[in-house]
Amino acid sequence: MIHKWVSPYQLFLAPALTAIFTFFFIPVLAAFLISFTDFDIYGLADISTVRFVALDNYVKLFRDPLFWQALKNTFYFVLIAGPLNVGISLGAAVLLNSRLVKLKSLFRLNYFLPVITTLVAISIVWQFIYHPRFGILNYILHIVGIRPIDWLGDPVWAMPAIIIMAVWKNFGYNMIIFIAGLQNIPQSLYEAASIEGASSLQRFWYITLPMLAPTTLFVSIITMIGFFQLFTEPYIMTQGGPLNRTLSIVLYMYREGFQWWHIGYASSIAFVLFFIIFLFTLIQLKFQKDSK
Amino acid sequence: MKFKSLILHLFLIITGLLTFLPFWWMVMASFMPEGQASVYPPRFFPNPFTLVQYKLLFQRLNLGRAFFNSLFLAVTVTGISLFFNSMAGYAFAKYRFKGKHQLFKLLLSSMIIPAQVTMLPLFLMLKSMGVINTYLAIIIPGLANIFGIFLIRQYALGIPNSLIEAARIDGASDFQIYYKIILPLCKPILITLGLLTFLGVWNDFMWPLIVLTDSNMYTLPVALANLMGEHTRDPELMMAGSVITVLPVILLFLALQKFYMSGIMMSGLKE
Image 1 (tube, rainbow over the protein chains, first blue to last red):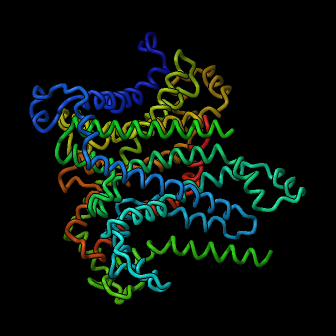
Image 2 (cartoon, each protein chain N blue to C red; image 1 turned 135 degrees about the horizontal axis):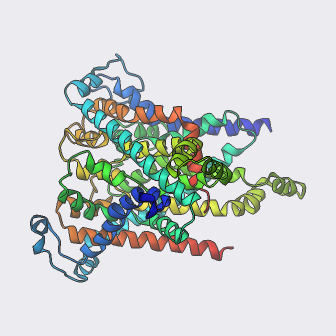
Image 3 (cartoon, rainbow over the protein chains, first blue to last red; image 1 turned 180 degrees about the horizontal axis):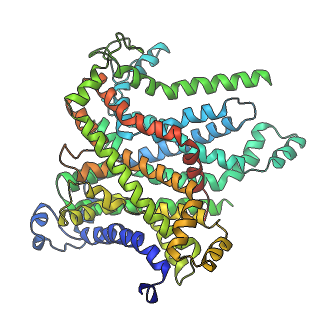
């Protein structure tokens, strides 16, 4: 009988944990090791050509202007789109949570719809929306008296264009989490504040924001982790251009790893990405602790 | 108060319409004859209404095949991972064993590792297994996932132990308890997780782009991205392709909206 030696919980855990261990943890470790080698297209054909090169990939990365460009672009994207996304989703949640609003679920659904849709399809739709001559965005801007913008063709506007689309696509997700957070704030707090004569702005500032702090932290962290992995939007809409202004870390990793087969080098890029995400999460957690 | 409410609704309606506008234009342009979506000022209704883009996609451009690939993979991965994740989640919720909390913490904290870190070695592994450009290249990495285990565990924690003990006294085996008691009780969370997984696989782009190299194996997003390379000047055709890709997930979401929302809110709960 099998269960004389194996406990039932082990049988329940085995399939999932084996899969996760083999196809997640081992690859993470392997990537770490590969990042210290010169694994490339020759290594793909014959693994014995792969040599240990210590920190060479990381040194090279440090001196690679294209990597710095990708790093800069990704930070630009995360540091603008991230706060914008959190701010707008909080605003939308507060508005939709108002007692004055009718048809709440309809509005909620409306704002939420972009979240579940396929990013590739949405990027294609927006590429046409951003069309400098026929796009509906420039048409709307024209109605309000703004000159046409070559959204995806102008090095200055390409990243803002991607940011606008990313915020549109994602804010509904955080909005739902914020609405749940708002509903957990005891109504008595607001009633007490009203009796004391607090204005609605004061109530927002002194009750809503502090009570939502854990939710905001959670939302900020998951938004940031997701945004650091920017890939599909520039892959589809700009191919990293113009002038590499929308080249992201992951797009650069994809090109180096899966187009040029610089597997060792691309692994070091992936690890730098991991390190940045890790660092940012720590900073945000620390920030939260200090503000308490 | 009346005035304030009016302003608020006006604001919500305008921003709501703006949020919806890309979808509106996508659907309308997909019914336009060639060239009609490339005019100034832009049109917001097709005239005449035509299905020619859809016919082209299915009859000449083989998008039906990509649709099937996407559907097959999303269903398969969802089924298998639900099975694996639910067993593991149940074990974490209801069994006591040494190192359980440490193991669970290790799993949770590793959720911060971005998937891109695993992609290069995973590709090499799957290549040596000879499954690149097959369905298995998508299925294998999706067999189980930490978030799914977490979600099931959170839910299963709420199941009373007395139910499990009663079944044990009645002589039920561990697997029978899982199958006949836990799974039915976990039905809401299984639907939630199933929906999240299905949407995740259906919408995924980077990994399928890497491992599916033959056009017969493409999923819809990969096929669409590929099509865009050749049809940059055919917005009507590309919008039809986008509608085909997006419509199934929207319908599925609308049908199971309640479960999806509760899933998001649960993921926001703290340990």
